[in-house]
Length: 375
Image (cartoon, rainbow, N blue to C red):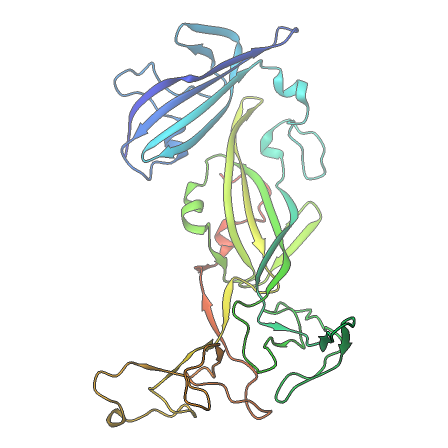
């Protein structure tokens, strides 16, 4: 768990200047470690064990690389990133000490967007965006049929079929989080009550939320423990007069990223937590129980068959057959017990099998409501 080598990447060494005498430098270092769990905090402070003078500069150091020296350019930003295996590239940027004041947009500001003297006083921020996505649509609102006769335009009819869905004149949305978004949705099938394969796709929007705040030390353990996780408990996040409530199972942590910065001699990490909210489907997968085969472990009513009724070495499933005794070629809905779903008002319309695909964790330990830096 140590740095084994530090070198300057010659191809990553650049400089630029303007007519006002402002000169900026960018240097890329190659750092090798001996442990894949050595993270950006270890790499950002790397020192070559065979040459202590060859190291990653500290924030605020003046430019002094190889034969180059500029006492008016200071280390402003250090950006480590892994490039494969146990090799990292560390980009170091240098510029005039007045750079932050000239730009203005990097000045620290408080929760009321007023300038402050120290980055420690800057409050956290929150941002929102919409993310377009789609998934298989197993339920919808049945509106009737569009019929095309020869040499005529297609005409719309409010037609149903035996054991099929009734005509539904409107789509009634669900206000509470639901996996289908439609209170009066029915299983989507053809007029023989067989599901479509492949199913139609449903386009909808997720909400992206990004919470950004300052850290003294980059929280690398948060990446390992929380990225790709789903919140298991309700979470309320509030910053700058914006509040979002994340119900259990609705949020998925997509990324945790950060940049190392320096202002007024104060080094810190600017860290962003990005998570997506799916209020329609959540992050579980509700899969329509359907197929071409039936289980031979139970009968049509879900009662277990005796072992004596099985042939020796028989397969656990049998092909579902039509009335002529031929295996069906189009999947039909199943009843949750491995048998074809019976039609009629006394039986289920459809059975969905629910699977959780991501770990469910309580995000309370992330303390996303904290406005000041995490010490």
